[in-house]
Length: 499
View (cartoon, rainbow, N blue to C red):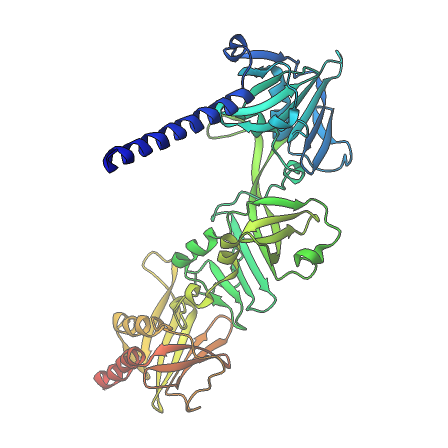
């Protein structure tokens, strides 16, 4: 026999052996799912039919989960712990599966070994009972029947092995903790928020307030103020603040870890790493005891709506192994998880980014004198106000503007004023930095005529690029030296032109 023929014969023998192996494997697999041809072709076999409106008992065994529910006053409650808040939709979904339990097919009418199907020790067992009729239904779910896109199952006391759709397994495949109802956090929008406070164990405190009572807004142009971390209150940059406020509109919990923890220290919540406090306005609608009539439209008004301030406080503990933080509210001992990305957005705040960069802005309508010192030389800007009567006999205020004692045009005066109040911060100093020279290069004081208050700002040497700004005895931020020099050069030049 030639070598070529011998080689071909060997190849044919190998192919025949492989074919035999495939046939044997097919027979073994088919045997598991075999029954009579008639049984294999059956579809949609109705197995259990219960009246879901009458079901009042449900028991679920699923791995470590062994939980029983009773229906009381239309609310599903845990038999073991009636005070536990239960997620009603999950229980109702399981109950609804008993409306018509139908199998896709029968795979074995008289199985000898339930272990072949994972039904000697079922993955899932669930039982439902009707209260009035006493009818019951039991479903046992075993291994996955991959070839049939379902799961092997048995029902009640029926010895047959059926194939149930995967939707049954999905409905019952829940862990005990998943049935705990999660607290509903407030649904917020940026327009509702009025206050934010963030306290961390090893970081800066942050406090932000919507100044609805105008306690801090002496200028009339700011709505939000940053109270912490600085000892001085700063107005906030409203345009940039929108993105920050948006970080505090969603407090959705990922999952419930323990609904009534007795050991908060295990989650780092006995002494929290951080506390987040948000105040917001909630629309409250009440029915009037006596309907009112709108005088303009004649429409009957039966309800009134007003805004009430509410508060939500979140305590942040340790991180878990899945990229979440353990959290709880101050209202209960239920421990939840929240995504690390959501928490970090609320905790990691670059406060300087959100303050208004105007160094010292003042409404000219409240000012009667501005004292300026540049390189040791003094300049005085004054506004004298006098009550006079106009041609119609009405009283009004007449203003006269002075620069170093000489009357000047209103537009010229206000041009200089607008320039000096437009000075801005540009950067944060290195922590603990002192000025290179304690003698200010520029000092400006605004005098309020209504309350005799004076606000002073000084620019001290820092480095080649910046001045260190001092206000009310506190070193605050850095201002670009070139821009500040250009601004106050206008004051010096204005005085020279006037001469």
